[in-house]
Amino acid sequence: MAHSPSHSADATAHSEPTLSRPALRTVAELLKPITWFPPMWAFACGVVASGQDLGEHWTLLVLGLVLTGPLVCASSQAVNDWFDRHVDAINEPDRPIPSGRMPGRWGLAIAIAWTLLSLLWATLMGPWGFAACALAIALSWAYSAPPVRLKNNGWWGNAACALSYEGLAWLTGTAVMLGGSWPGTHSLILALLYSLGAHGIMTLNDFKAIEGDRRMGVASLPVQLGAHGAARMACILMLVPQVSVTLLLANWQLPWHALAVFVLACLQWPLMAVFMRHPVKRALHVSAFGVPLFVAGMMVSAWGLRQSGLLLTT
Image (cartoon, rainbow, N blue to C red):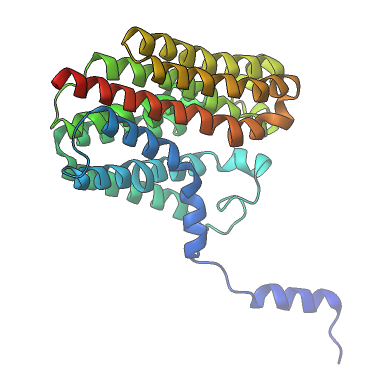
C-alpha cells in the first residue's frame, strides 16, 4: 500500500539524526579568525615601539600574538555570538548559533572554555600580560553579557572594544617587552589616540545590523544618529586621531613618520567622502580599503617611537 506524502515526510524527518555537536569548521566560524588581525597588529605595534631587540624576545612576541588573536579575540567573538544569537537571527541567520549548526549550549561552553584557556596562556607572559588579558576578558564579557551589556549603547560598547583591541593590546606589547616596566608617556598617548580611531572603525561594523539592532533595542550609533549621522561621526573619530598623531610625531622630531601618517590619512578621505553619501552601501568598502591605511599608520608611528628611543639611547 502506498504511503501518503505527509507520512513519507514525517518518516524522513524522524529518520534525520539530531545534531549533537558542531563540526570543527563551525567552531572555527564561531571564533571568526578574520577578526583576530586588529589586536594582533596592535600588539605587534607595541612590541616595535618598545625599542627592544625582536630576535632576542621572539618568544614573547609569539606568545603575545597567540594570546591577543586566537585566544582573547576569539573568546570575545564566541561570547558575543552567544549573547547576540537573537539579534543574529534577524541580521545574520546563517551564523553558527541561529542557523542551528551550533546546537544547544555549545556556543556558551566554547566561550567559557576559550576564556579560561586565554587566562591560562596569559600566565606565561608575566604579571603585566596576565593583568592585561584579564582586563580584556572582562571588557569582552561586559560588552556582550547582561546585565552590563555595553553593546546596548554604541558609545560605550564601541569604546570598550576599541580600547581592548587597540590600546590595551599595544600597551601590553610594549610592557611585556620591557619586562613589565611602564610603557612610557609617548606610547600611552599613541595607544589611546589609536583606540579613539578604532571607535570609528567599530561603528563601521554596525551598519549591516541596523534593522536587527533597532528591533532588539541595541542603540548602536547608526540607530542613535541615523545612518548618515553615524557615518560622519565614524569618519571624524578615525581622522582626528590620525591628524593628532601627525602633529605629535612632528613635534617629537620625526618629520618623515609624521608625513607618512598624514599621507595615509589623506588617502582615506576619498573613501570616506563616498561612504558619507552612501553609508549603508559603502561601510564595508571603507572597512576593506580604508582601515588597512589606518593600521599602516599605527605601525609607522610605532617605528617612529622605536627610532626615537634608539636615538635617545645612542
